[in-house]
Length: 226
Ligand SMILES: [Zn+2]
Image 1 (tube, rainbow, N blue to C red):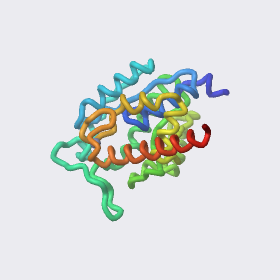
Image 2 (cartoon, protein in one colour; image 1 turned 60 degrees about the vertical axis):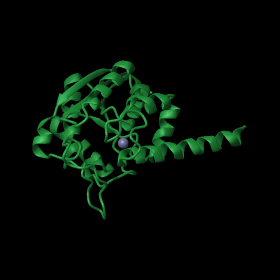
Image 3 (cartoon, helix red, strand yellow; image 1 turned 120 degrees about the vertical axis):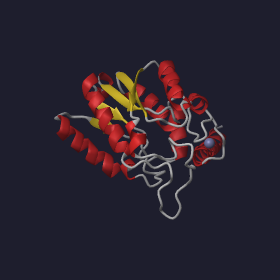
Image 4 (cartoon, helix red, strand yellow; image 1 turned 45 degrees about the vertical axis):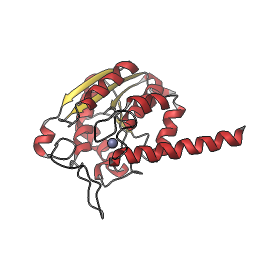
């Protein structure tokens, strides 16, 4: 495949989704680098976790200082005094930072251009869409065009998880042979607990629901096969 000859930058947080994307990219591209944005996450462990995974996977890891994001939009992901809550009645959850993906992907584009990468991989997903408008497929396509115009380049933004449910994202990790790695080494929990997390926060609930659903379906499938 032609992509095997090319280089990609993965937008990488150290969570389940972006770690799965990192392994996906390793399969697809000749060379992969990861970029993590440090925006004063309230759990510093998130950055450490990303560092460890990048080291283990053997990819070059860029950490960009995005503390200005917290200056612009203090929110539950960065501030201890704001509770993490699910959005009710179409409201955005308290973890929402307006335009975060717009900023992150734009910076990833600049980095890609600096390191000679044509491909940008992000784990955004419309299926588990919790109201973030810049996770939508239409936004990504629009940004791809804008970035190419802005930098007079031909970047391709890849979103391997865009239409997957959480269960299907676990399935993808399994197909890539890294289900246990993703399960044990990633941090998704809003309370900063690695692997299966606290089990109580919205991120843990979503992750667990998907994993249970996938493991049930896998059990069912192997039962049929044997
Ligand atoms: Zn949790």
